[in-house]
Image (cartoon, rainbow, N blue to C red; front, side, top):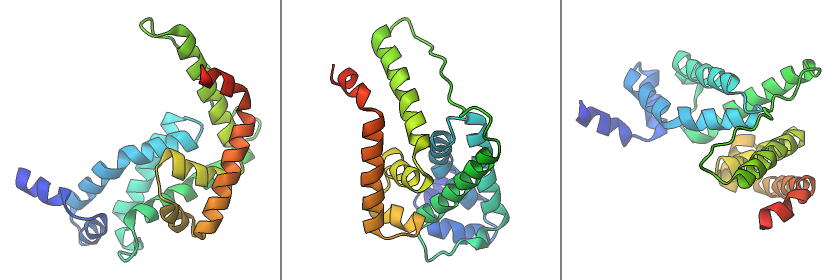
Length: 195
């Protein structure tokens, strides 16, 4: 059994999708193992740190994969395809959120402090992260997507261009704008961060 597991560990994503489309459930298990945590982190960050919503969307995206694996073009990069789907799911959530605009933005401002850490630093970190989340959400969708894929998910400029189906120059421009906007919105924290 360990040999079979090891074999699946070394198979590229695209080949796993080809195997899955032939009914191989272990291929699905391997893809889930590789990407469920990363997708949860992405959805959680992009959707107002709503853990329940993030878990739902991870479930939904993998349900789509297992129900219709043939929807993936094996000549493309699985990772960029997967994040393109995830990005579209976030866009749908933003649209739903616009419809229910009178609700809160979903950021938990409750500060819990552990007794074994520096209280001042802990409070400052929580306050900064809350302000950062609010500022990120306030960016328009195209700038938020580029910034999140680059700085929160670690995608290369080319991967972002592939996911969003734009050219690398546009990625760079949006990234510059998003960074500039966030820096402006968070400038009051520069003093705190330099201490």
